[in-house]
Length: 447
Image (cartoon, rainbow, N blue to C red; front, side):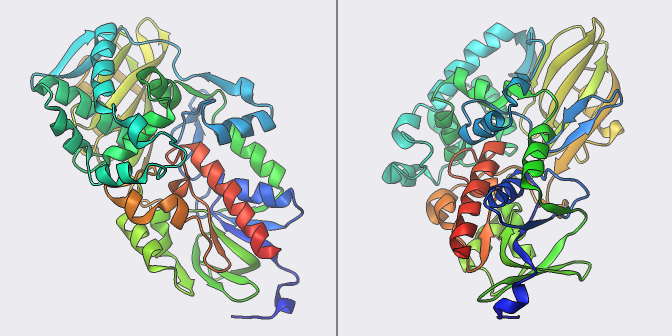
């Protein structure tokens, strides 16, 4: 590894690995201070775990990260910066009339009003500790003793504490599993408790902040604005194999064998990829252990489908383990045709397979005709994600304090990912926050 300043006179100030929101914000923040950057992206597109595509009619459609809100401060600051606040629109054009929800070992229809009444009461009981545990949710360990006392708990542990009636347990377990993209037995209770706290400790705030709004022309609108402002060179289909750092610079080797040199490297990938890249010197033992253990859901998926033959505007909460976790009407094309969104359960192998999707939907809505389908899947088979959205497992918050420990640079290697944000970890806001902080770390190194 060269250790001579002269070898870096003609190279980049920062080599950024990953062209999602975190990497794009790093590049923008550095460019605004006169620094030169290169972004290396393994995929053939920008966005990472966000992804805007076009439907057959040419309409923009998000099939990765989608939902945004003005209560997410870093996201809203970016929307204001680029004059995009008018892009925020309702995520659905219609509200559900009927809900298909777990009951008596199966699924039964009930009015949307009755469903909301039941769900609100259940969630308020489930999350009633939020003010005590997360009085300042942007600082997850502010009430450290209270957090430590509950960090071992899974959602199932908390459900069992409540001793709910079977139908109520099934209802709440289903909706929480859909939110976390994981089973109640594997998801940290505190991860969702913190969501509740960030959303104002209320049922109405939860659904408003988590799923009620999107960007009219897709998340790519904001990402493109940030990248344009950054003026960075972006190289697609450029997976990185190795990062070697010395006293004055870094060498980043691509899978192709090409080498890009810079003064600092920024790893803006999901945390599960940390152990997959070769680092010299090697990363800290805790960082590698966290990457291997996974601070993400095992999988994350979203699909959008057109349906014909269903007159109701509906919401479906599948039972835990079902192929479809959550499904709802987005808008109506006609009295007989609609667009619906669904999230996949663990038994859905491939949400892009029309045959598998048809079987899953017909188990819920047997009479519908399935039309256009668009889907994404981030899981262990996706070598550039190795999992879904950021979501800590039981015990990980107090064991590692990721937003404190893993946000720190290691030599000339800096880290940016929503996985280690201090608050909205599972959202675009968390990636933006992490990118701003990482850029500050880069400037400090280069000072």
